[in-house]
Structures are given as C-alpha cells and as structure tokens.
Amino acid sequence: MKANVGGIDRILRIVVGLALVAWAAALGGPVWAWVGVVPLATGLVKFCALYPLLGINTCQKD
Image 1 (spheres, rainbow, N blue to C red):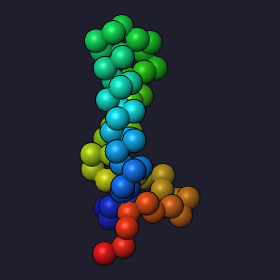
Image 2 (tube, helix red, strand yellow):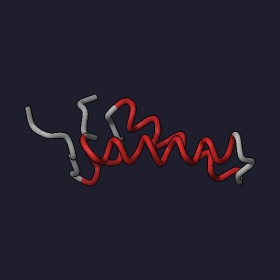
Image 3 (cartoon, rainbow, N blue to C red):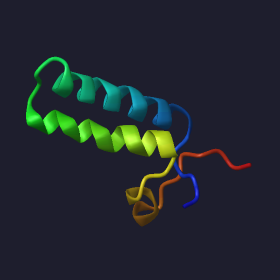
Image 4 (cartoon, one colour):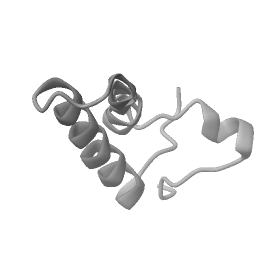
C-alpha cells in the first residue's frame, strides 16, 4: 500500500471523520454518521482504496 492521501486532503479527512464519529457516539447523531470511520481511517493510514481506481494521488512526490 503506497500512500496516496496527503496534505490538506488528509487533514480534512481526519477532522470530518472525527466530527462524524463524535456526532454519532457522543451526541446521539444518526446511525449513518458512523460512516465517519472511513475518512478517519483513510486519513490516518494515508491510503484510500478508491484513489488508484480514479487515478488520483494527493501525496507530494519525494
């Protein structure tokens, strides 16, 4: 798994994921808010399985 999520994309994924999970867990949000686990996980591991299929890479080249 080569990293393909970087920079602002990663930060946004983590923030949105945390917000959705917190909404579902602590504030009694709807069940669909648990989908926030997906952007949170992809932001933390720096890999999105959909990006290679779409030819997207937001990581800077080394």
